[in-house]
Structure formats: structure tokens, C-alpha cells
Length: 45
Image (tube, rainbow, N blue to C red; front, side):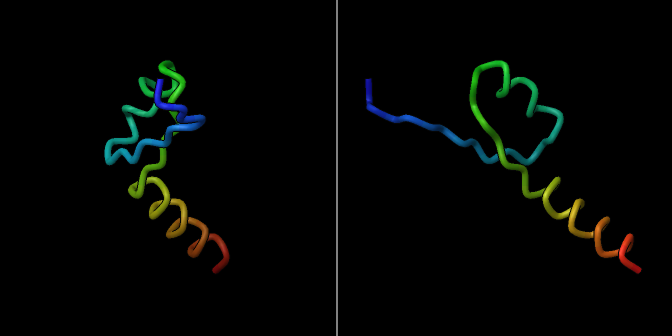
């Protein structure tokens, strides 16, 4: 209807990502991105 080819939704609760995936909507979660960066920082030592 609007000619939008791709929708990305910013979410703050990573537990909701599956719900959006079922609807065909990609998500990005600042909480998960930040946690992954911190984890990689400590894994590198």
C-alpha cells in the first residue's frame, strides 16, 4: 500500500523479538547490541 520494501523496528525488550519475527518485521534492540559489545570486550581480555 505504501511501497515500503523493508520495515525495521527498534525494540527495548529482546523477549519481544520473536513476536516481530513472526510478523516478518526485522528488529534491532539497543539492549542486546550493548550487551554483545560488553561481552566481546571482556572476552578479548
